[in-house]
Amino acid sequence: MSDAVPDDDRLASVEGVLDELLEAGVERTLPDPLLQKMFTLAVRQYSRRYEEDPGLVPLLGEHVNATDVSNCCLEMLRVVDLEVFELTFWGGRLSADRG
Image (tube, rainbow, N blue to C red; front, side, top):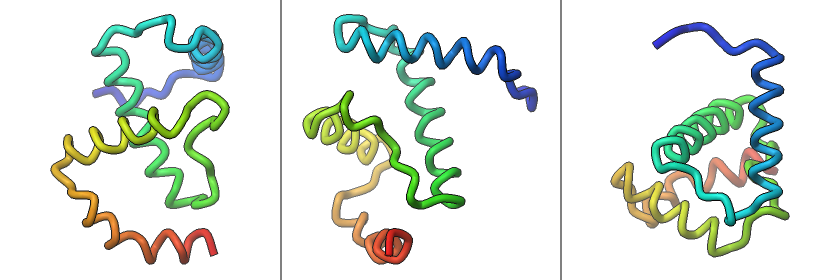
């Protein structure tokens, strides 16, 4: 893997594409490998950023609903072999971070 980070112009073009995809909604299906890469990057970036700013909201709420979030959360837990009850280990941390 390269340590190179895309420059601001490339990141802006990616942001433009993401804006278009959000506006298109579910009518535009992304190829599975692209979706997996985007999701993986988003989760890793958010996790890292959460350490710096626990108040950062991870989603644009107007673009997702409870079913969307539930589906993703359950599959994410399955992929990393984590049970729902195990999330209680982090429950105290969430209260302290948001407090």
